[in-house]
Image (cartoon, rainbow, N blue to C red; front, side):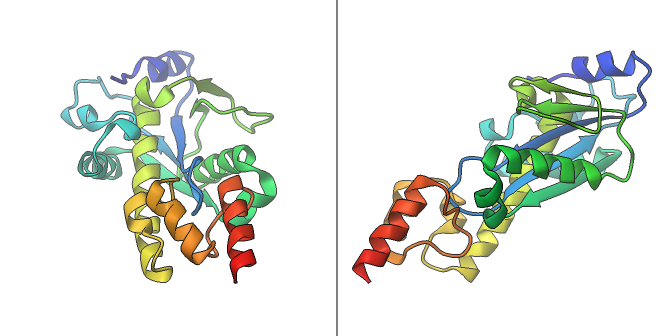
Amino acid sequence: MPDLSLESGVYQRGIQFVAGVDEAGRGPLAGPVVAAAVILPPDLTGSETWLQLLDDSKKLSQARRERAADAVYENALAFGVGMVGPEDIDRMGIGHAALAAMMLAVGQLNLEPGHLLLDFIYVRECAYTYDTIVKGDSRSYSIAAASNVAKVTRDKLMVEAEDTYPGYNFAQHKGYPTKAHFESLRELGPCPIHRRSFSPVAQAQMLFASEV
């Protein structure tokens, strides 16, 4: 379970606000990569009941993630969301796009963070001091909070995409590479929110074009 030890270590250095930052959507074949940044109150003790909702979003059920995100919206000092769409993912590469979404999320905070706790990602340069934490969403409440906000936000976008692009079952698989998704790609070809730089999409595009 996460705790506040990483945040406490930063605050002990006299830094005022610490933001946890995480992204959702590196692996899907479609849709944006979405990131969130969250600043929790510095005076938390770790015993607050709502904190127990937080963990790595990948470990939680959809209902638990939504409850966790709601708790963050209600209790955080600040949160921000950033996203990078499929065309920019294709242009930048998913690693650069994920980091760009994370920095966009930080830019949406209504408080200026003094330090960032990033779920592990390779960083070439950053305007803030930061730590990049392996399995950070399982270790830090701030990163876990960001993990759930990012995941819930992205899932809602993909559910909405079901109406715009029917037949792809985006509401079920959220763009991830499932059997059903591969089948719809073969039958329909890629749609505008597919990531054409990802090899399964590129292969489906070629196959679909050859059959039309």
